[in-house]
Each structure stands twice: as structure tokens, then as C-alpha cells.
Length: 152
Ligand SMILES: [Zn+2]
Ligand SMILES: [Zn+2]
Image (tube, rainbow, N blue to C red; front, top):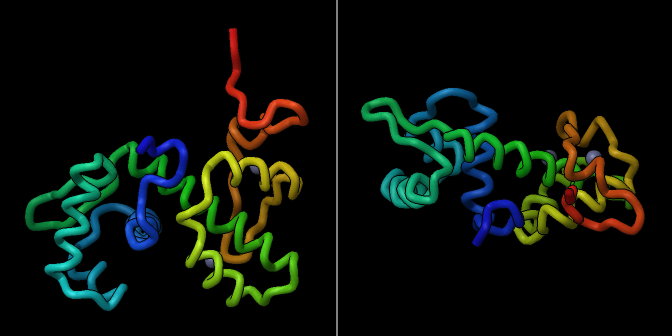
């Protein structure tokens, strides 16, 4: 599945990518394992899958870091979480509820839908748990051209 559609990763992988992005630089496998309370051997398998898909790179004896593709995708994953959790807060949930609810379903929401929601929410700058950044994709979501790319 194309990473661009936003559905390429399971919710667990989404959480790992966001964690590596927010930790910045190289992250040890054991650090990720203890942060998520999972067995290091389980995490090694999942990280190998993320590496095979081109999101992360293994640095022997140091851990893993994001590739350019991984960084770009991580920025989208974080934006998606912040847009969806802010949407829930605006509908009456507390910040904590919104964050945990969004984490449960966000991996099923496409980039197209996130860009659309961002547009209809007026491109908010401040999310529940951090700043929200905007790119050409969401800023181009004008009436009548849902998700269309620039042509000609
Ligand atoms: Zn959050
Ligand atoms: Zn936006």
C-alpha cells in the first residue's frame, strides 16, 4: 500500500514511528521496548519490518533512526493524531480522553480525510498535545477540489 494514503502502517507501527521521531536521532531498541512495555525480541521483529519498508535504518550497536521517508511520514502521523484529537476535544472530550481515543483509531484514517478535516477546522495551529503544521496538501483543500493534485 502506498505510504501517501496514510493507511500503510498498523497502529502499533504508527506509535513506534512517532516515538522515534519525537525522541530524535538514534534510538535504542531496548528504549523503545521499555517505553511500550513489550519484549525486545518482539520489537526487533517489528522494527525489521519497518526497516524493510524503508521507514527506518538500523545502525549497528546503536539502534534505529528514521530515513527521510520515515521522517516525512512521521510528520504526517503526528499531524493526523493532533488533528483528530483536537476534533474530539471540540466535541466535548477531555484532552486525555481525546489523545487516547485518537490513538486507537487514527491509523485507519486516510491522509485525504485528515487534510479535509484540517481545512474544515480552519487549519488550527495548536493541538491538544502540541503544535500542528500545515502543508500544501491541506492548504489546497478548497471547495470543489477535494484531494486533487496540481495539474499542468
Ligand atoms: Zn495526543
Ligand atoms: Zn491544514
